[in-house]
Length: 387
Image 1: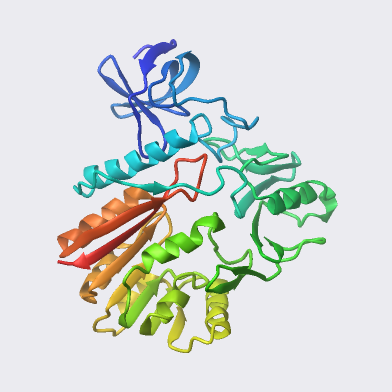
Image 2: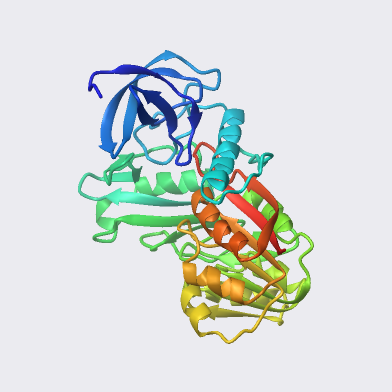
């Protein structure tokens, strides 16, 4: 394949957010593309028979293409869909979900819906800011590197976090903890929490009212990025869920544990982060729910050691890497009537669904939620029942 720029047409957007093109019998993955673009690209690297390329000229823009509003777009690694209209982003994410389910799990779900975010911008209520104290930069990693992109204004942060970013940027270098490389930050109804705390910045406890439930947490415990969609996600995940016993695996601060405890007589939540389990127990106590217990353990260790013979319902919300094979086997051995799988990665979701379907479960319904506008990431909630 020649090294000088050459012309390709973007056929569709693939998992990972890259555009697919073909030339000279080669498969080419193009960063920051839109479906229908005719672009000149250069090859960045080769991996087997695949070529990874960057756009050097837009010859004919796709109808889906818009001018990215963020001045850091293309350099900052945070957003990779700003070049597309929001409708095109949603369509691309639905196609990504369909592609993963078909290619990895051999599941055909033609009508995939992705629920839009109420806010396309200024939605991110949690972030990790990278710091380079030598260069005095604060922001996010640059695309495909560990260099820090110095960001003064982030178009996807909620206003409270943008204000906090500006305050951190104004902090004198000698007030920063020595060796500090990143800051975790999250917002709640009562302010902002940063971890680690320093100067005037505190790892304060926050609360969030989601209507029927109130949650406490801080920046040391994981909490979801887009809070405006949480009630809809919980409602879909809980659809028709009732019974004697339920498990909430990778339960965090108890986002799903609380509503599960209102529907099942006995609930067990399992989470490895001790800060999160502390908040989960408190959230249950504040809700006056005594029929649930929270265990601090990795889900893998708990599955290996627990003596539960069966359960009615399992909800799992693992990290992006998905559930470990032993966890999937353990869930199958518990013989639940129903499973709810919450995932932020369609590829690892499809990998795990393939195992669950092979073990005798079928997909009852699936819904995508656009928790991450302006990026290729998408939240998925899948309900399964035993055949």
